[in-house]
Amino acid sequence: MAEEVVVFSSLNPTEVHLVRSMLTREGIGSRVQGQFRTGLAGEIPVDDARTELFVPAPRAAEATVIIDAARAAADVERPCPACGESNPGAFELCWSCGADIPDGPHLRVAGR
Ligand SMILES: [Zn+2]
Image (cartoon, rainbow, N blue to C red; front, top):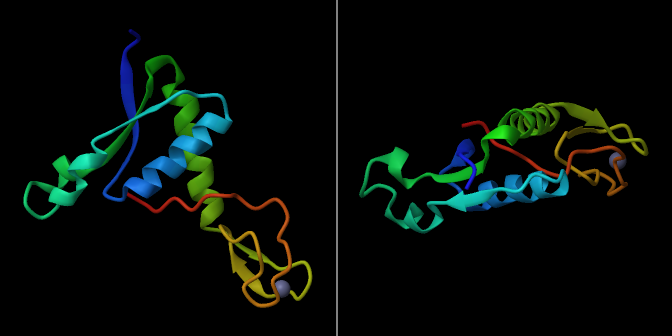
């Protein structure tokens, strides 16, 4: 069994699973741990309630680059090609007119 390291963690298990599916698309296998403890948030130290995402140690640097890129992209406002309204980077459709926004990231990753 290869050594594993945590590349992402969140109090929101859904977010961790989104990151996991993003890594899976990039061909990086990962494992989620701790998601069943989240219901205890507030009763136990917060750091213990986090859901964590593990990847094999040799893939950690690669996974971190992908996660950081998704975070950065989600923070960038992009104009709608149809109506010119500014949309948050995570939007795939314009909030104003509903047009497709090309080349958008498909994941919103909140900061830790
Ligand atoms: Zn628009």
